[in-house]
Image 1: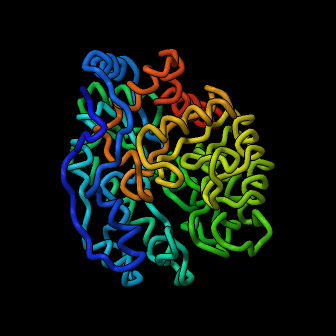
Image 2: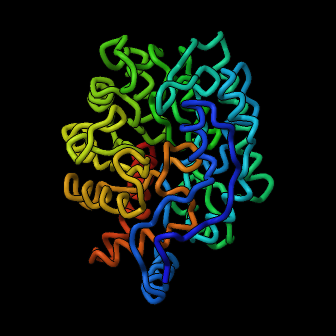
Length: 384
């Protein structure tokens, strides 16, 4: 039996420094979240066999926290967080054990300008001239290093996911959280594609940034800026998937108005379902994203849930709102708030739980990776 108290390795401890500890401690994976359900050995075996047949893909993650490497000018709390280092080797082992085929390896464009605010992050200063681009470039070097070391297999197109599985390595989909690195030049999206980036979260935590307003700070621009419109167009032209997570409703709807392909929100939930939160979105926005052919990424943050069973509930809630073709997984691995899915070793448990609740294999395959692959392919096809 897989028990409610399934433990998945150790972790690091951090000093209890007020709100910093509440934010950082869970992310360093010291206390595994409750599972909240049981699977028999046969049910677990069926889930593992499913993952042999269908690739599981995490559409938003920071495996091993590569984004902290080389960041300068940090607020002291984030400097302390940085000192715990990166742990990509350990997470890749988790991916293999959990049969995860590929994940987004996402940079964080605005990490150097952030500080702690309550249960999350907020910008505390503006970028210095050229700082955003320089930090982006450093992160690309770090991500490429993971490929060059042989740790992961690069995923530049949907077929590369199967190539990664054949190579026995997790696939790495390069992404960037926050488009701030473009500064005043949307053409940098074309360079990002050349760099291997296949998804960009339009805005992140930088309040008053040049692209548009975020959902966790008072509006400055009243939505998407003219530069933001050009950035969306440049993403479309380059073949980079548009992620509207973190965008204010007006910014997101402004982006949808000019977007020419599928859009996604890789890690969020709906404010209409049980609990409201600034990081959740409206039904209207979720349905507008689905109408583009995109998806909503089920997000296992510990906001209103405290177990993996609660995450399964959220997946089913999203399916009920936007349909089976418009739900994926966006774990925010290694940068989430009180995560209830805190290790990829639990991936088979997600599959097993959905099976146990009676979801059809074809539908689980869509959620676990198929919907991401469809959007990925459609985004590249639009350019071709």
